[in-house]
Length: 288
Image 1 (cartoon, rainbow, N blue to C red):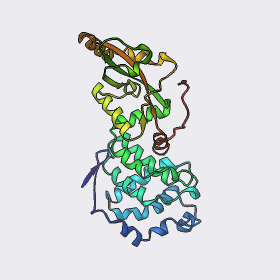
Image 2 (cartoon, one colour):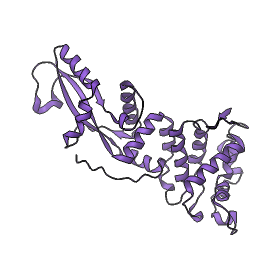
Image 3 (cartoon, helix red, strand yellow):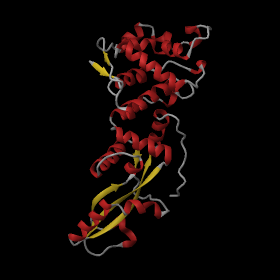
Image 4 (cartoon, helix red, strand yellow):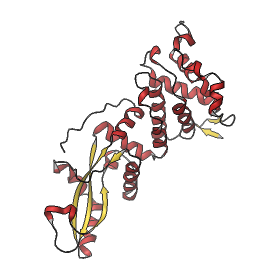
């Protein structure tokens, strides 16, 4: 297997994966001993500490020494403000799959940075308990745009407006739109992709929302919307929404807009805390 780094340099893997049992044979238990006992009291650098903590993972033979040199350098950047005595060896069920995934995402910045941050989270005793093993698969099943959208939501607001357009035939029960007969012709439309500076089509953003909901990172409550209705102005005024509304009318039906909100779940919030660097969880200013 050949890995291509962002600077164009190739890195060749040196062999197949070693089974988990080999980590134990190599003395993985030694890696989780107090760091000072391994590197001594000689004023070793952060790089040396990270080298010791990652040592057993070299048995995975992913990318060779060149790859691990790059990995240690990036982890130094993310852990530079963490005291050496606060560093711990990452759990193998987190570090192993994360490093393997990194080998395939070195040139996909949005995903690569999430994997690196997850590994750094697992190496800090103050945050290690946040590094849930399932976060690895969550990142693996995201596109770069989806990662960018989640970062935007986490750093700016815990929820964003979305709408559903319902086509209704016959009298409209406006006091109970949710129970009105009809069918949804556009579900959970949002412009968070534009806010997050993503380049994608309407079909793609609808797919992104569905995938993030499937992964449990976001949810779309059926009975919740923003009390400040002005936050929906840019969504309801979007050209695509206008086209859908006109198409519904052309079929002799009445289009009704049902306001929704897309928000991070508890799982999604914990995911962001572990996988996004430099973010502070905070509630949004908007009222619901």
